[in-house]
Every structure is written in structure tokens, then in C-alpha cells.
Image (cartoon, rainbow, N blue to C red; front, side, top):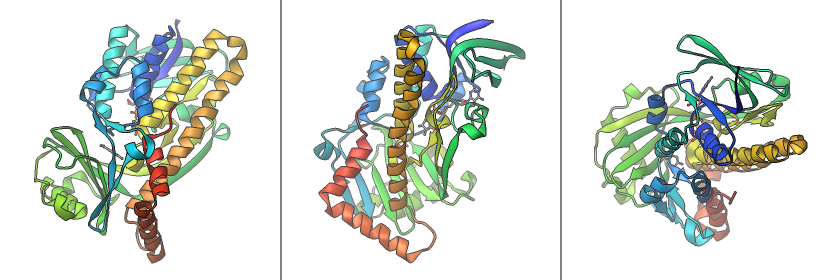
Amino acid sequence: MVKTQVAIVGGGPAGLLLGQLLHKEGIDTLLLERRSADYVAGRIRAGVLEPGTVSVLEKAGVASRLHAEGLPHDGVEIGFRGHRHRIDLRSLTGRSVTVYGQTEVTRDLMDARATSGAPSVYEADDVTLLDVAGSEPVVRYRHRGEVHEVSCDFIAGCDGFHGVSRRTIPAAALSLYEREYPFGWLGVLADVPPPWHELIYANSDDGFALASMRSPTRVRCYVQCSLQDRVDQWSDARFWAEFRRRLGGEMAGRVPDVPSIEKSIAPLRSFVAEPLRFGRLFLAGDAAHIVPPTGAKGLNLAVSDVFYLSEALTEFYRAPSRADNVLDNYSVRALRRIWRAERFSWWMTRQLHRFAGNAFDEKMQQVELEHLFESRAAQTSMAENYVGLPL
Ligand code: APR
Ligand code: PHB
């Protein structure tokens, strides 16, 4: 049977980055991904990197294009009732964020893995995890019609929310925490220079809108939409009209009608499964937790998880006698950061969206936002959460 030290299930940013960090430590990995490499490389996802994320990508040796092309942002704006209020991340925290698409991060990581020579199997079907509670787990999968088995020391479940890893753990061994939100985000990507300098998170009477960007010539924009909506009900003209209405003020007049190059709807969810370890199986990234995108934390949390996991595995291979402490410590460290990001993402979501009906809740939202605009302490708290703690 083929052997590897760490079998990585899932080739999104979590799985790829873990592979790269372990490769730097001389630890072998085999990466199994259900989709094709082109599919993974083409997915459009979020785009804001915390400074802690940038430093992990530097450590992994995949930050040169990010440094050349990423856009440093010293602030973000909150739109409310026709006015824009700037949260000065740099002056409040001494740090700033970098706008660089997850699609680009994924491409850089895929290139690095190809260069390292570490093996990957794309279009791996029916991945099954066996004996994860024992000391020699096995991963079985089918590739081009043939069944393969790989024996390993550890399995890293980096296979996203719908993956097989979390479902392999007996229900009694996991606690699940979940909240679904009664709306989604409709996102549009378009080639036009962004009329805004920094991201604008807008709370309007017609619902939330986010003005973001990917590069000096490409915007990424979102509007809150109904969970029943389908993409084909949203022509480009309808999207831009709605986006302008929600952005309001003079900025609305600067948003042109441009053809979209991608359009998709995503539901909003908060979710945590804990602990992140079951025997020799670890969960990381979206396999373990989901945040609503309002706080820009999804990718950043995936990066902090795999950074902590890479440290735990590296320590294990240096001193296997301390195994259990070291391995459990991953879950404890990662969950502390996960819950903090869950709280912040839930808070941002609650303050910025239209929820159906309760007048008291609407007042609370208004008072909370006014407090944010008036209180330096409230702005500092938001800014610290937005840029994230050092790892
Ligand atoms: N076998 C193998 N691979 C699988 C399986 C399976 N059974 N199920 C899912 N996968 C793959 C998916 O095809 C996907 O490529 O696992 C990968 C998981 O990648 P992501 O969903 O990108 O999750 P993650 O790497 O944790 O990255 C988190 O992605 O969704 C965003 O907001 C999230 O930005 C965050 C980031
Ligand atoms: C994005 O650019 O896609 C983006 C930015 C900030 C968010 C969410 C998404 O909070």
C-alpha cells in the first residue's frame, strides 16, 4: 500500500496551504481533491487578507505575487442612511488589510505545490476515511475507475462544508453550533476601475450592499437578496440599479452599467463543529466552520487553522512522545480564534442587513451603528477584529 505522512482531503486554500507549510518542514503529504484543477482554480471567492494571513503566506513562500499585485487598504467604510463613515484601520490598530482575491491565493498555492513535486490527485472520487481512531488510518479513493488505498499517520480534513471528513466523525463525538440567516448575497464580478478607494459596507433601507474590488481594473459587488432568488432573475441592469440605490449618495452616480463576468448567489450561515480532532483526523477551514462573509473572515480563518495545525504536526514529528498534548492543542488554539471571528462576523451581519420586521431590532441596529460612528472605542474594537490578531 502507498504510504504518506499526512493525507490531505480537499485542495482548496486550506488543503493547499497546509501541504505547503508541511513541505517546508520536510513532511510528506498526498492531496486528494474531488474536482478538477481547472475547476478549483476558477472559483470566485472572497478577497480581504489580514496581516496575519499575509505573514503565513510569506512563511509558506507563496507571497511574491501577493506583494506585487495585492492592494493595501488602510480603512473601510460603513454606509448608513446616505452617509459614509470611515473606519481608519491603520490609525486605530497600526495595521492594514490587503485586497487580493482568494482565486489568486489558490493559484499561487497550486503553482507552489506543482513546483515542490508533492503529489496531488484531482478528480479523486468516493474518498473514504478508514480507521481514523487508530494509529494507522487509511484513505481509500477511486481515480479513473481504479480504487486506491493510502496508509498515513494523519488525515487533514480540508474538504469544505460539504466534505466527507466531518461526516466521518461519529455524531456523539462532535458538538455542532449553527445559525442560518434569512437572506443570501448576490455577487457580481465586472471589469471596470473601482470608483471607490476602499471597501464600502452599506446598510440601506432596501438591504445590504458591499462595494469591493479585486484589482485597479476589476470590481466585486454584492447585494443582499432573498434565498428564493435565482441568478437568472437578476439581469446586469437590475443588479446595478439595485446596487446604486443601496449605495446611495454621490457614489451611486459613479457606478456604470457594466457587463458582469461572474454572478452567483450564496446563502449566509454561521457554523462551528468542535473539537477539531477525532483520533488521527483533524478538521480545518470550511470543513470545521462557516462564517457569514460580512466580516471577511472565511479565508483568514482557514489560514490560521492550517498554520496552527502545521505547527502541531511539526512538533509531533519532532517529539512523538508528547503526541496527545500537542495534537489536542491544535483544536484549542484554533477554536479560540474561530469563536472570536464567529462573534465578529455575526455582529457585522446583524448590524448591516435588513431583517424582516421587528421595529425594536431595527432601532437597536440604528443605535449600534450611531455608537460605532461616534465612539473611538467602538471603532477600535471593530478595526481590531477586522484586521485580526497576530497569529
Ligand atoms: N473528497 C475530496 N475533496 C473534496 C471532497 C471530498 N469528498 N469534498 C469536498 N472536497 C473539496 C472541494 O472540491 C474543495 O475544493 O475540498 C475543497 C474545499 O475547499 P474550500 O471549500 O475552498 O474550503 P477551504 O479550503 O477550507 O477554504 C476556506 O473558502 O469557502 C471559502 O469562505 C471560505 O474563504 C474560505 C475558504
Ligand atoms: C469580496 O471582495 O469578495 C469581499 C470583501 C469583503 C467581504 C466579503 C467579500 O467582507
